[in-house]
Image (cartoon, rainbow, N blue to C red; front, top):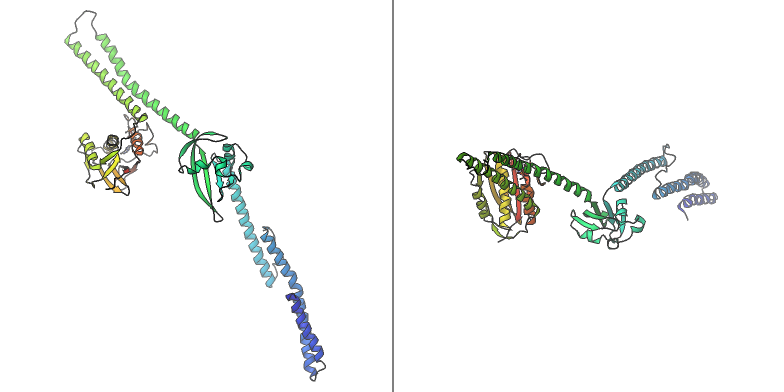
Length: 430
Ligand code: ADP
């Protein structure tokens, strides 16, 4: 029996009992009891008569929410009784849910618009390895529509090898729809406590080509500047010497002899400078593979500093550490770093020091110069702020260090004005 029926049935039975009691020895009490029971029955009837309807209403409203219809509102919110209170709270809840749903829809729309506008292809894989989401760039990359792609795993889509590439790496890859150089990024993805994978494939061809074109333009600018600088004096010197030459068969006087010698010397110097200059560029383009051996850091530092023979350079005492590297190439790096530091520091001292840092030796060259120019291009080949600079010292140095599993960075000093070059190379643990 339903509770509401019970609520009515119990007083009704009591009323019946009251009527039966009417024939009892105490009729007055029986009548009073009967009247009370009749009253209760009327009240209960009214109460439960309305209640099933309201309960039903509440159940319907909750069902609507459960189905995601947050536009429903309970009527009767203006009432001052319990039901009014419930209706008001329900409506507040529905409004909040509706706001959140709207916010969520807007975020989803924004996200899908952003994904659609991206140059890079985005793939999201479920925990079971199946493709759950792909953006239009991803469809173009694989040359198929999302409908044909969703549900397939990375292997079937030809993307499995990219998930093995270290994130952030640039790789050359041929996809069904496009080929070229791509930056690959991936990360794990957690949604509803499920672990998935996100793969982003960013086209790099255009950016790299632009970067290469810029480097090429810089190279041409620097080369033509240097070549013109050398060829102009050579050309004018040749002309002068030609004019000085006596007629055929006539002897050279002493003065003329000296002029000729001087002229030839200048020509020789300029062409040697030009050769050195071109040699620098050739080195940048054809850096030989490093011959790595055990290198004592203190001995390396001493060797380089001796080459400079400059009182401004001071070697700080350091631990007797050894690293794995190519000593000749590392000497070249230290020469570049020290030369930059001396040029930046003017009369001030330049410090060369080293210490162990985890699995690496950290070698530092610090100066008291003006600090770094505000450019992110210091390591870009041919970038220079010096009138006679070639702009290859840092680029070449980083190339050398990275080929030996190290890193090279240039920072503003924290303890003083000036810059500090930090080179880190694998230490040999003894
Ligand atoms: P170059 O010395 O021929 O200019 P580099 O590649 O060695 O070529 O350096 C590139 C640029 O980096 C320099 O022109 C200079 O602007 C900046 N730079 C390098 N080292 C320092 C330093 N210690 N302090 C300030 N600027 C520096």
